[in-house]
Length: 202
Image 1 (cartoon, rainbow, N blue to C red):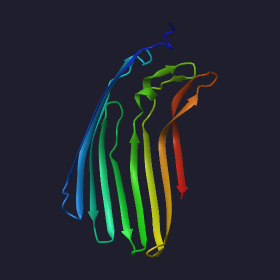
Image 2 (cartoon, helix red, strand yellow):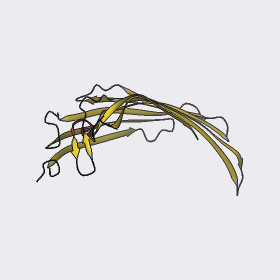
Image 3 (cartoon, helix red, strand yellow):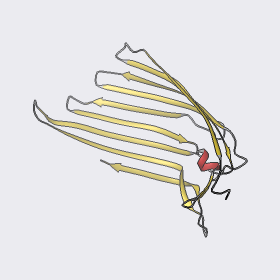
Image 4 (cartoon, rainbow, N blue to C red):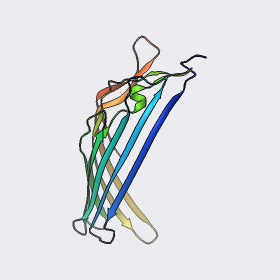
């Protein structure tokens, strides 16, 4: 009988994606284009009454080019539109160079964008284990990601081989969406962490 625990929420979601790859008979270049679309209409007693219908559309393209027998490049760009948030162009580039038969070098850069989800923005979720309040003031996440690797095969024979791979990455995020407890309460909410940086070596 408690409206906080016994509720009815309705999610109407439509998603569509298409891709086209051409040509598939050339060795030196391959082009991929496509788009995706998502429509969300959510309502119910746990959803903030002022929540809008959210829809997003994106056009993307990616090109794989064999510049030489040893040097390959993959360049892509995504052009998103979001009905609530301003979305930037999202580029990416991947490069691979075979120094020789035993050494391969790779490097890449990609920009990232993520708008907050409906749950993070407008849903107030309460049960015996949770008390989470949506935050409609959240900002979008932006990411710059860098990665590089070197792959070496010092020994390769018929029945045995040795390979070594060294890989490093750096992810620089702005407005990362986290969850934290609201001061002096038992409830939690989402917030933006202004700057977050992750890096590693494998």
